[in-house]
Image 1 (cartoon, rainbow, N blue to C red):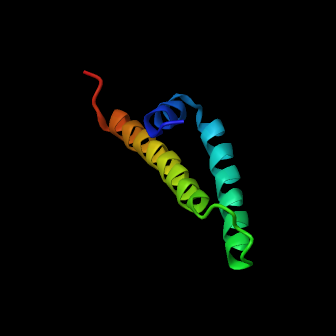
Image 2: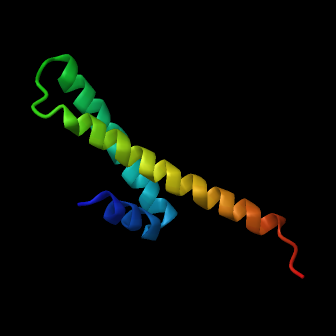
Length: 77
């Protein structure tokens, strides 16, 4: 899946889905790092991919928080 497709998928997801995906990716990253430390990691690029997906989710969450804060500050008329 291309990165723009993943980003669009994350943007379309609910906050709860993002939170669950983030937890799953962080867990996966932990296992990948453990495999790397014990020389059992077959594809080192998986660590980079996991880190980038985590960053994408965190970016979407941050943008939503900024958007919500801006909506609260904006006067209604």
